[in-house]
Length: 219
Image (cartoon, rainbow, N blue to C red; front, side, top):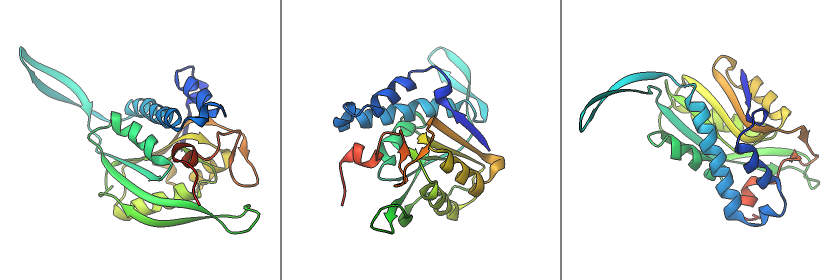
């Protein structure tokens, strides 16, 4: 399994990350969502460099141009609700891609909120058979929701290649993906990898709950 940590490179993504981590900046949900989307666009561009390409002749007003275009059939998948602005960033780049959605959310099993379970109740996806599957979810903490989302998507076929895309990852989540995804065709993309998680399974230092920061609190 390949792991790409984009924070190791100097790029504008680091500016977006600095803003999203800032507790004051987070007070404006629109700005936070916009930066999640922009990280998605930048990451999609990086992933586009790894695709298979084929030549295509295009008729212009003055002649014919040969252009190298992606040959991969792409499925963009995300996990409700935090993944929506991140997914939209990818869709801005891969605008011809198919789209897949699953609901998977954390459920605390104890009053102290230290034992976490994942609940899945909705799936909408085209066939992923033979396609390049990009699963875009901002936070890769324990990796539990990513695993269950992946297992839901592959009920509709076996993808050719898998890209796990996240804004921030914890080492525990990356290790969980390593143990549950096919290592020979999986790449994990991160805008940052943080040191670990707290007792409530939130990434530290992270930036908090991505869904709440994008859309407000929930019951």
